[in-house]
Length: 217
Length: 217
DNA sequence: AATCAATAAAGAAATTTTTCTTTAATAAAA
DNA sequence: TTTTATTAAAGAAAAATTTCTTTATTGATT
Ligand SMILES: NC(=O)c1ccc[n+]([C@@H]2O[C@H](COP(=O)([O-])OP(=O)(O)OC[C@H]3O[C@@H](n4cnc5c(N)ncnc54)[C@H](O)[C@@H]3O)[C@@H](O)[C@H]2O)c1
Ligand SMILES: NC(=O)c1ccc[n+]([C@@H]2O[C@H](COP(=O)([O-])OP(=O)(O)OC[C@H]3O[C@@H](n4cnc5c(N)ncnc54)[C@H](O)[C@@H]3O)[C@@H](O)[C@H]2O)c1
Image (cartoon, rainbow over the protein chains, first blue to last red):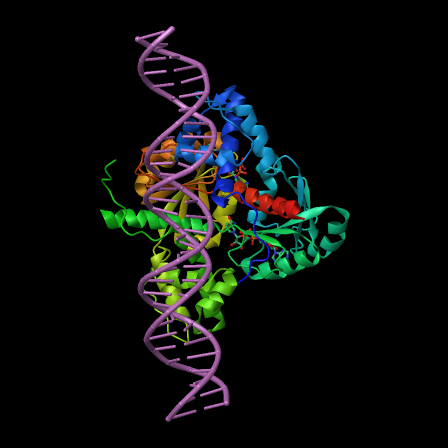
């Protein structure tokens, strides 16, 4: 089959996954006043191979000094820029239930470049409330507000069975990326970015390791 | 270097990650009364290659029928057994804040074999409360209760800076696995299973894809 | 009854990701 | 000043994972 659009040398996804942890670690060191950090130290913190760290950082403009390591400040600055954490992107959250509320309370999202501008629900008892200063609107108001604010991401935290309905609405509203926290997979046009965050996968991995251990005994 | 303990042909982690979604899909089909499902259908739902599905399922005892597919009931039964979702494991949650409360409210965990027996905190205003029928105790009571109940997993949902302290306590209490929701990496003895669930990795991946798209334009 | 098309399964090939090896630089120690 | 040890970086090798290819099976269609 002919490949029309070739991916330009992309950064490996596992690398992208690790980078926020490097960043968080470096931020901690910065607060403690440490000026340099070696790949060995980072690797030790992350429980991975030091060359992995070196390779990961080589995708950025960060360069290390032999026998010294990387400048902590550079890691913080370059990595947050690189990961898109230093510009604020706007998002809408749909489903202001328990998980939705937790996300609305999480300052980490804000710190890493995501501003939840508004939340939406269908439950009359939540509509009109403010959760951590973010107002909860009725879902029908989404369209108007999406036009007003420059929102590129939609966060889905409704029950799984309603995920597709919400996704369809988001696509209609012109949202570019969807962060889906339900275990349901959604169908959207090809150009929409979908990130599924399924906590139960993590549970499966833990159980697998636990039971493997039992098997080995 | 000599390798003393060789991993017995383990199931690939990506496979384990996908399986809960296969299971959830099959459960939905079962509710709708569908008897068989093909790898093509599953792959279409998951947005992956059909042979990937076939290969993944081949790690279990599930066998498909040519021209027909897999029995939905078999997928549900075998997969939930295989993933360790059909036996209940007990857990303690430490940090009954916004994320902790969300997890306590989540019936999905229960459905997938995890029972949170008790929650712990240091904040006097949360201690004594019940969140979704789970009582919140002072952290000092953890030791006594851990002995009483057969708890193998600890869930950490405290602020990142307290993650290590809590992890140390959990290890001292004899917990076998730790599910860490903070962005901080914790240090524990080798035989303790640690699963880090860092939401911000997902954010980084979305931003990366969004910006890659912008670059290609 | 013969043909066709969809499928699982097994294995090969390709791709991606991680780990290992080598080299060069340089701070610290002797 | 010389030696030693630590480190980044680049590239090679290995390992893991995904995708492709082939084969056999069988329900549906002609
Ligand atoms: N709670 C958790 O910790 C947790 C963990 C993992 C995954 N999840 C997943 O996240 C999703 C939400 O879970 P939750 O525990 O927050 O559920 P929840 O019931 O507490 O919240 C869901 C919210 O969505 C609203 N809603 C329902 N349909 C809607 C619609 N069409 N439009 C707008 N709002 C709508 C409800 O009114 C409710 O407020 C579920 O799919 C769940 O599996 C939750
Ligand atoms: N809220 C979210 O949606 C979200 C998302 C991703 C990651 N996280 C991470 O989860 C962690 C918790 O976040 P949160 O938003 O729930 O914070 P939170 O402040 O709402 O809750 C933290 C809770 O931990 C308790 N606590 C603090 N130190 C403790 C200790 N030593 N022992 C026992 N309890 C202690 C506090 O009293 C509080 O109730 C953070 O690391 C955060 O980065 C949260």
